[in-house]
Each structure stands twice: as C-alpha cells, then as structure tokens.
Image 1 (tube, rainbow, N blue to C red):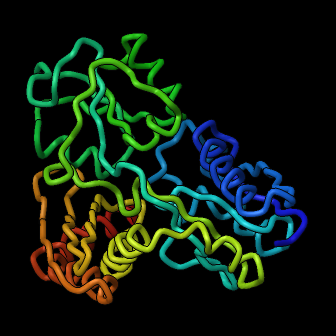
Image 2: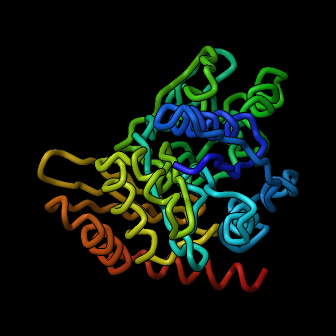
Length: 310
C-alpha cells in the first residue's frame, strides 16, 4: 500500500462517520499507511434551504468530490451510494461496496404514534420525493412538509414541535449511534428504499489504489446495489422522480422489487423479478422495462414535462 492515502468526504456528521470507517478499515489492512480525511463542500451542502429536486441535475453530493479525485487532490472518496449517479465521472470506478447497513426507513414521532395511527392532518417532514409519494399513497390525509438538513437538525425540529413526525433512514441513525424514542420501522415491502440506501460507495481512479480499496468490497452488497442501479439506469430516473428499489441476495439468486410512483401517491406501479446472481444487472433492467411498460413511462414523461415547464 502507498505510504499515505487521502479520503475525500463531505463534512456532515454522517459523512465523517462513514469516512472514518473506511479510514480505520484501510489502516487495519496496513498499519504503516497514513490515511487522512479531506473535507470537501458539495453543491448539495451549499443549498440546504431548498429541496434537492429544485436544484436539478445529478450528483449534487458527489460532483466536487469526484473533481478532487480526478485532479489527484484525493486518492479515494467515500459516498452514500444513494447519492452516486449511475454514470460516474470519466476515469473513476466504484472500487468497493462494503457490507450494507439496514436499508429501511423509520417513522419517528413525538408522541408514539405509528404511521397507521397518526391523526388526520399530522405534519410529517421529509424532502424525499419517494417518501412523500409513499406517505401520500398510504395516508393521503397527512400534511407533508419539506425537511432538509442533517439528522440532528431534523430530530431537533421534531422535538421542537415544528412537526409531528419525520422519516429517516435507519442506516444513518445506526451509524451515528442515535436511538430516538417512538420509532415505527417501515416495512421494506410496503416502503422500499431509495436505490442504494444503506450502502456505501468507495470510489477511486483506475490506478493502484483501486486494488487496495477492493479488499473492503462485500460481494453480496455489490450484487444488490448492481441490480438496483441497473433498474435506475433503465428507467432514467432523476431527482424529480419518486423511485424505489430493493434487492435481496441469496446463495444462488438475486430478487429485485421496485416501484415508480406519481408524486401525489395516486399511482404506485410495483414489480419484482428473481434470477441468478450473475444476472443482477439484467434483472434490474428487466424490472425497469416491466414498470415502464406498466405505466411508469407515462408517469416519468409527465414529471419531465412539468419540470421543464417549471
């Protein structure tokens, strides 16, 4: 291993926890190697008062980090997989997908209700179009409010009474060591996650560092993410699109369940397919084609037209 490695990362508490995990793992591989963190502010970090869907484009949390990686300012980058576009910047590769954390979402309430028992008109905070659509599909009587910021900021707004409930990723809470009261874990079947949720992507140039970082790869996590990202690539989703996908891997098979939804939750088109492990990407593309043919194309076209009109 080289004598020094520099990890590019965002500066949020969660991003730093994830980067420090990679830092420690690399140092365990070679205790003589120095591994430093380089904090990089991304476009997504600069505009915390606006919904991500209004900022447009892809890779809002990775673009500047990829630029640092390509320029040689850092040697590798640690991202949340759900933030990584399906098309990487030229010359870069996902060298490792470490073991995936819990991909589920959790509803956190102030007074102990579950999703089914929240009172009519309860204020639920999220800025994820996927979560908004699924919440509206399950409970059209709820009032969905935009909510951005880091995990601590979101929990503070809930505690202050600004909201009655919020939806967060279980993986983020667990990585931060947070265990707030009044949690309602949302089932993966009814409330599937964002593509890649709970997984990390360790990105490198196509150089010697790639092989070093490859030791951190978990084959089953990579297969699951491969199927999910192939689905995303097939449907051509963007930040304006409520999409979800969750792949499960057994010894012999990969199963992908996915959905395309309208933002108001009035249409939720679901599908699932199972196939051999070596066909993970094909399975993802096949589910994408199935959902597009079942009405997903019309949903996506309407969203694209409305985004251009806006």
